Amino acid sequence: MEEKPPYSDIDFQIRLMTDTDYMNMSAFSCGVELLDKFFHYEIKECVNHHYLSAYCAFLDSKEIVAVITYYFIGYSGCRLAGVLHSCGSP
Image (cartoon, rainbow, N blue to C red):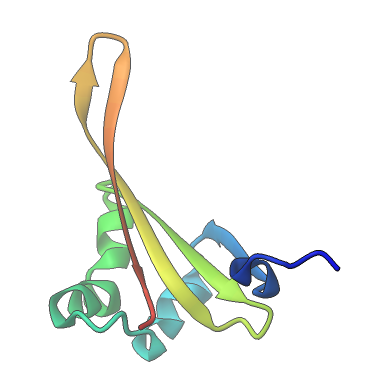
């Protein structure tokens, strides 16, 4: 019998955050107080000002299990540089 990797038992999806996701962020915690405050109170404004893109990973239950932000830090010739931050539930 073939053994499954542990992560294959978890069914989740990743998508751009929606208005509903932003409203549901108060239930999300990654265990880092400073990041939690950012996710709860500032992330939507940063997206609205195009400072970053925000994505969430969620389960079939619609519970957000991770938040991923990506922001641009500049251009180098024709290459685009960026930084990826992610934070998941502990």
